[in-house]
Length: 153
Image (cartoon, rainbow, N blue to C red; front, top):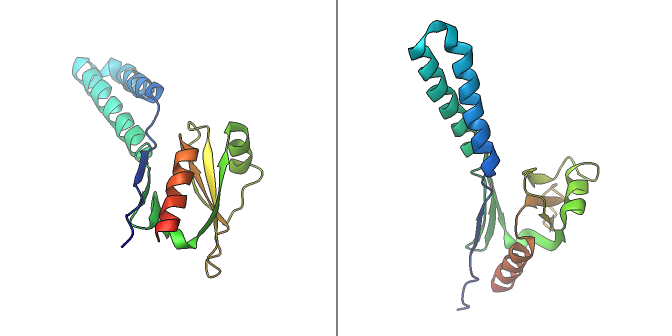
């Protein structure tokens, strides 16, 4: 039995500035409700901040994992045997593949606040998806984890 590849896990959390924006949303809701009194003002502050924080948190909860012979990216679960070559992309190349080079059939887990990415070809002939685009803060390490999982499989 071969030793399993070391797992890779990354959570694409929202940047810190978004939490400040959540507070600003709460303040704006408080200002909207200011004419109705102090209690609605406080409710707007707390409620607006809470709703904005939930939205920011859920958007920033996307995860990328390489475990058990599979790449799990967001809702997608792809066996590493169906993956081809991994292409590490710097910020400029990642922007190009997010915009004008993008294929509409591709699976894209992208976050604009993460500048670098990894593009992995899909080699399964039954799958019409040409590649998987993954925003990641450490594309070299993700590519190495996929290569290790592919050799272990």
